[in-house]
Length: 116
Length: 115
Image (cartoon, rainbow over all chains, first blue to last red):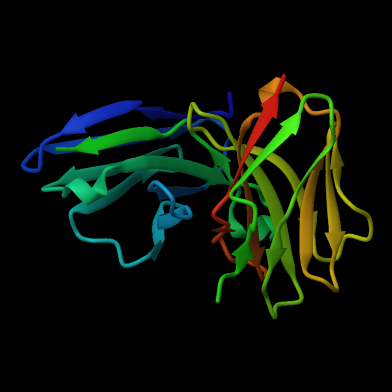
């Protein structure tokens, strides 16, 4: 138990559906991240929020829309996804950048997404 | 060029033997941090160990140690006395510079511990 929870753990959706992934951290961190892990690919950083402001958006398609209402919660809203978006989506949190380069990111268990 | 290279896509090791998982990195930044994560089949990423570029000694955490060879830009993970529960994917990762939130991950090594 890392202190980062994600729901749902598994999700199957059609290409026309709208769904949301939820992440919650109980570690008092103020930076949160979304990663995508596809088969046989390195982990891809999608979004970074620091102090509830988005500081990184790695050219992610607009069909992925993040939301960070407070420092403990992070959402990833999904709409009109493609089959190639099927992957494991991991949320992570860390202390903010002033903690230095050694600040470890703690990951949630992930959501396995299948787009049909 | 890849920032983090893990050359072993898969490894098979007998239980109770020591294991070394290779990781090389590429950076021109003098200040960086290196991480190892374990990912079991359940999917979650578990932090194992951290090494800072200015740390004089190799990091150790229980059965995990990091063989840090700065001149060779190498940060191999050593697992002593391997256990069946060590079977998982292992990722090497790096964060460059002060104040950068990004951690760059390697492609991972799948470790199989044999009984």
